[in-house]
Length: 460
Image 1 (tube, rainbow, N blue to C red):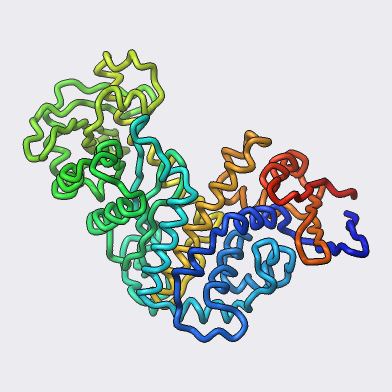
Image 2 (cartoon, rainbow, N blue to C red):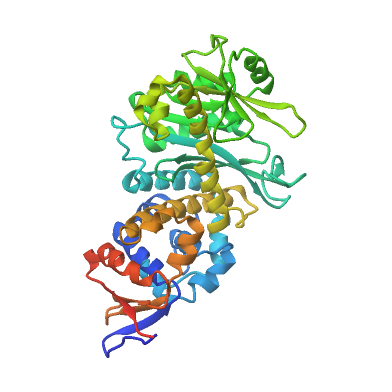
């Protein structure tokens, strides 16, 4: 590629030219401004303010850094990228680590509040129209393995890692928007039956859910949050609930009351039936649906779904013709399919963050340091979701890109950043050999139109 340069202009190469454009958008939004105002870390400022070092970590995560040590190679060596985000230089990675280690519980609360304010101001989930449709919140936990000497690192459930130590991440996402509403860190023994209520309370605060909004909010949860006490607690708070019963023993007893089993046309060997025993132990009416799958040993694996959703709700939420509300079989299947959609929602979001944003790779010994890193990762996730929406008008397939492809194929698109004599970015030249460069030009032009920045393809 040829540089564009005059006597009054200076051109810098960046491996992250598109990310630089996103950085300019975030700078114009003053995204990090509330963090500068709210988070007060008790650390002496020598060259960089503590919040500036948090910003360096945030940019590095967007640039694909799996470990903070990569700040030196991905960000510190790329002056153009730093300037696009409003930084004139970058802190050394060890200095950023020291700032994270200096964080205390009060700083974590400050950061949570700042991230909440950012979410309310810029997210799609917060602006959801509750009168028009129901808000869907998925809640789940995932293991965060770490060293045995890390604070609150205990033995617990870590998939395919027996006797592993670590912590647990609890997450609430606005499923229709793929945004993280809440991320909270727990010790390694904590599971959803303990973490559910704190997560829901935190989501209420972030989304500012009034009792009226809760009536139009669905909490979709796996069996970990399906205990009798938890379901009644959610019902008492006016939520719509769609979850699996916590007790396997109770599920087997309830399944015995099914008078007719229906074969699932989508899943071979799976049958569905309505539980006929009255659900008198719940504080509000619920529908219970038994689901059984044939195991390799010839026995049945049985679970029971608990739902407050109406036939119209589940048919609509599974995008089926509305006239199917008159078919009891179709309604039963729709309830099961709606629960199955968890796999394509929160479970996928967690997996994408592990692959694309290195969710489980950046481990800190101090618990508060890990919480700060977690919150920076949550913010990075949401920024990528918003960036996907900003750029998708010119590339329809971008809507299907996960975290890894956004970071790897979009943000890592290289080019030259051109500055005027005052150090302002005036021109971005994308590498025309990159597969998606030509398609991104129009979206970037629209995105940065307020800055009067020109976007072009460079010559080879």
